[in-house]
Image 1 (tube, one colour):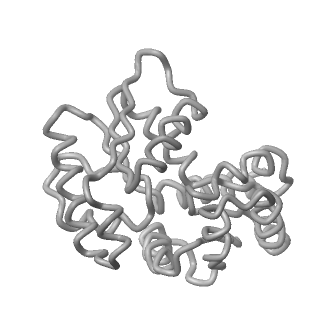
Image 2: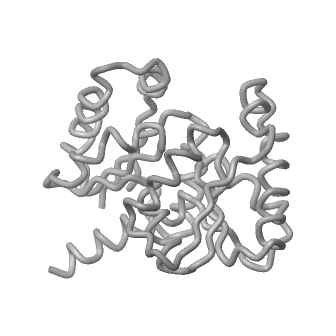
Length: 215
């Protein structure tokens, strides 16, 4: 059982490692790779971003049963490869959107920036949003600014507040679109725990591995 994860933030390693432990995955089943340079290339509009991302994923797939791409900034660049790779490649944000659409018809997806909200709205369409389903990709106010300043705890507090407000306003499913947002769960006062990237994507990877072993 080998799950490779491609991150662009080193802090995501702890989030996914802790989630894997809660799911009962062996400690040595995860292999993490951190490529902040790919995030920088995406932000700079690198014309060869897709080639760079696919090369990184293909390298990881050589020693893995499943590969998980945890960074939504790179997700679009991996779309074609994920559809054709002989080794399953899961785009964590896409799996998260699919899970939310299966669970609810009234969804608020929390994002850190306007750019990520615009991408997320398109992502839900790609993931199979039905006409009757309401999906709002909502920017957490001031969240991106706090992150730029290095104030992660402030960004988490803002995320928790935004999740609570979304629930109070009638959303039946709140989705945390960035893995780091999972750190806000501990302080949220909501009846329903928001969906987040690490448990949803690792559960999907585990389901693939179990189905493969059953065959």
